[in-house]
Image (cartoon, rainbow, N blue to C red; front, side, top):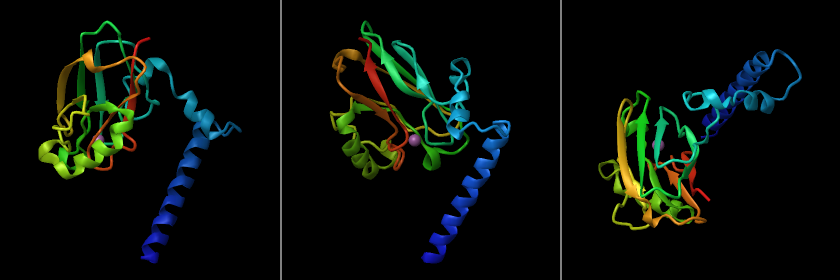
Length: 189
Ligand code: CO
């Protein structure tokens, strides 16, 4: 065990060293910090079209949202703002990766922020065939099926159950994904 742990640690160490070298090159060998380099890459115009690099940002207020995922554990947006006049909310989820659903499946699930942990835990035992969700749990406000690379799916749900001022979280219920793949949904004030 300890040999593997040491191997893993040293691999991580080399990985971070390599990244540091790359970041230094990217920053033109100046004394800018790594944080500055990352922040500089977030150009709002390129953010939405680039799921691999740009930092996820908020979407503009709308009733319909195009959300992109890939072969990594992130959504391309980390905040959704729903217009207060929306009767229904539409989510179009697109997986631009290559990995199959059983390897790198993603879905979009909406609950109150306080319900995420329990809903995600329940979902693991439900299995892929049930989209890693116990859909009979009415704390789930909206959900899509799990999709794999090259697939897309859409849902539309009533905005009636959404209350301004409540903390809502959207997340992916694939086992292990909800820790990183999550964002907030807010009602436009
Ligand atoms: Co996922």
